[in-house]
Length: 252
Ligand code: 5RP
Image (cartoon, rainbow, N blue to C red; front, side, top):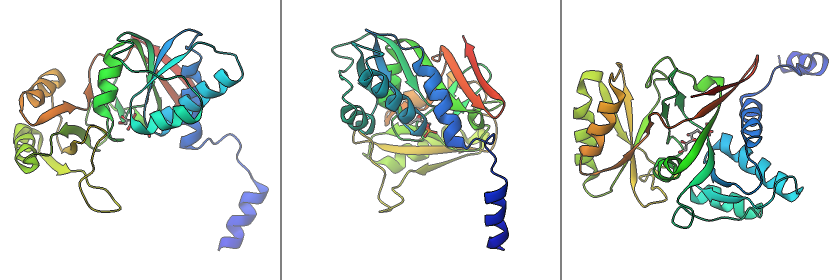
């Protein structure tokens, strides 16, 4: 019963077993070690990136880092960075970033990524493409043998206009991979989830391997209602993975 569970918790704490959130934080803090004063830094979105932005704010407050300019990849991250007094700008003012730090939903052995389950893939891709270095931070649960291998969603940002048509086109494009396409909805309202750019998200689920990733990405972009997809191919320059056995840093 619950009494026994309480007893166990009281008598045998397990300080060596880290939660997933603690692993995310370890990866995030490690990435912030790559930031030096004077850098223009892309600030990612999601629960892992949140730790990196917190850490950056802390180091600025302590004066360990100075003259940092942050470029947020979402409204959420913009709000967080503002609350931490991190000086902010955008890629119109700073078209070349020194470094971007962001999480990912899947990372394959070639450092290709799926991103966007947090809904911010378009701004993330624009900002991370503009960065000289792109440091990806994940806990080990994000590692996959091949893209799509988690069985979870591959997000695609689309325009709201006739979204069912675009959904159908996306699903047809990947029929050989037994794709099911679903409109992302808000869990609270059931209404379509709306991105920071006033678009919708289609989540693609694959039962089979999608094969050539570059061809898949290009084919999606050729569909007129598609704005951007969550495949981030060849973009990551460093992947930091926090696992139960420690942290690994893999460079391109
Ligand atoms: C948001 C993203 C996130 O980086 C990705 O979803 C990982 O999120 P989390 O760090 O919360 O696991 O791509 O668009």
